[in-house]
Length: 441
Ligand code: HSE
Image (cartoon, rainbow, N blue to C red; front, top):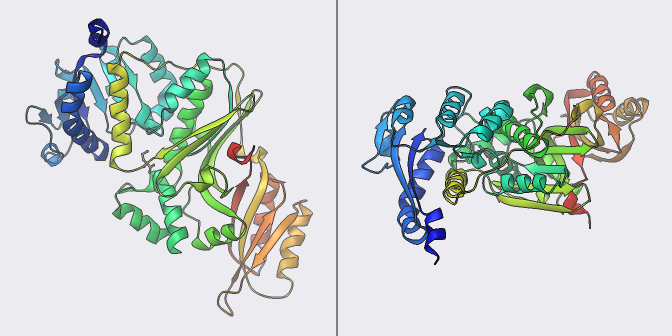
C-alpha cells in the first residue's frame, strides 16, 4: 500500500464523551470491542481519554476503559487538553449548545447526537461549523443508520433538487404501531412493551408526541433547502390517540398507519408536516415494521430513491456517532446547504387529502344520514363506510374514508358532527397519504 496515502487516514483520535446514557454506553462498547481491530486493520486508533455523566456510578456501569478520566462535570472534559474530539450526548438545548460552540471555536472536532439543539439552532451551528477548522458530525441526530447527510450534501453539489422527502423517523412509534397491529393490543400495552425492549425513552413523550420526528424533520428541511424553520411553523401530531381498532379498520381498507414526516416542495412553496397517516401496505414505508426507519425521496426530474435502517435502540445511534468519527478520521467533512432564496412554508390548513375518520356513535336510525349531511354541506364526499357492532347498546365505531377534501373543511365538519347528540366521543381523523414515490412505476 502507498504509505503516504495510508498515513492520511492513519489517525490517533483522543475522545472526550459528554453524557453516558444509552448512546454513550453503546459507543463505549463499540470502541472497546471493535477498536483493536480498527487500529490493526485501518490504522484508526480511538482512545476514550475523558468522559462525564451526572450520575457518579455511570462510568463504571458502562465499562469505561481504565485509563479514562471520569468526572461529573462536562467542563472537566472540555478542559482536558489531550481531548481533540468531543462527543456530545447529553441532548437538550443547554449546556449542549455551549459545549458545541465552545468546542468548534477551540478548533477541536465535535460529534453530536442532539436532535433538539440542531432542530432549533441548525443555521447558526452549521454556520459556525463552516468556519471552524475542526470537524462537525451530527449523523446520529437524523436517522443515523443511513448516510442521509452525505446524500443530501452531494445532491446539493449536483444542483439536484429534492422535491419530496417522506420519512418514518421514529423507531419507537413504528414499534408501538407494529405491536398494536400484531398483538391487537392497546396503545398503552404496546408502549409498555417498547419500554421493556429498551426502545422508548423513560419519558416517552418526545417519541410518541411526534416531537422527536419533528426535530429530525426541521433538520431535514435545513439539509434540503438551507431553510431554518421555527418549530412553531411545523404541524405536529403524535400517535397517542390511535386505537388498535383504527389499525384493523385501516387494514380492511388495505392501509397501515404510520407516523410520517412529509416535506413537499412545489416551486418556492414547501409543505412540511408530521402526523400519523394511512399509507398503502404496498409502499416501502408502509412495509416497515418494528423500529425500522425509512425515507422515500423524489427529485425534480421524478427520479426516486430511499433509505431504510433501524432507528431506535442502543446501537443504531452509537454506530452513527462512530461513523462520524470515521468520516473525520478519513479526512472528510460534511458540507452545508446553501439557502434556497424565496422559500416559504405552507400551513396544515392548505393541505388537501383523503381522510380516514372514526366516529363513536349510537346505533340508531338516521345517524349515518346526520353525519353525511354535515359532510355534504362542506362538499366532502364519502368514498366508503364501515360500521361494526361491538357490544349491543354501546356506541359503535363508524369509519369513513373521504374523497379529496380540504383540511380546513374537514376540521369544521368534524367540530359540527361532534356536537350531534348521537356522537359519543371526539371523532378521530387520520390523513391518507397515497403519494409515496415507491407506489409509482
Ligand atoms: N427515540 C428515537 C426513536 C431514537 O425511537 O427513534 C433516537 O432518535
